[in-house]
Length: 109
Image 1 (cartoon, rainbow, N blue to C red):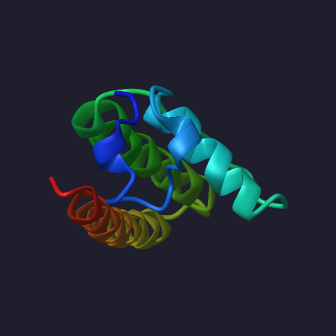
Image 2: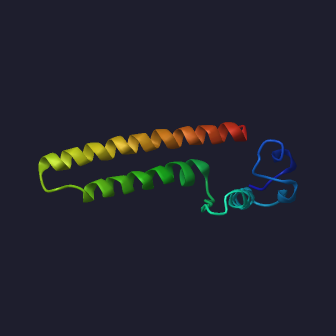
Image 3: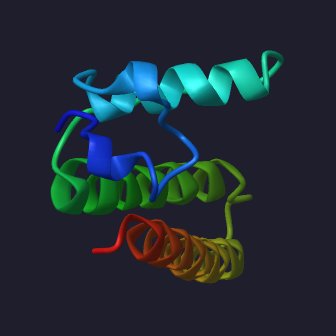
């Protein structure tokens, strides 16, 4: 998807020089200019599967693995860390869903 003139009034991420440029490239450049000390990782893909559910699947797996490494050899420890992983994953899903909702609202979707 490329920046069109009609996108200029709806988003602070694009300027007149960005018309015709891929949206992800323009947004990455603008965010990097605003915060040079930060790191912007552009993701090109379908928002529903590559960015949305794809990211959530990876985050869920990472949380599960990290909690698994903390298990101390008893059934109680396995249960506690499994519960912790589930709670953390649900929290991340809620936060990412809220961010996605704000993003979609800003984009007018």
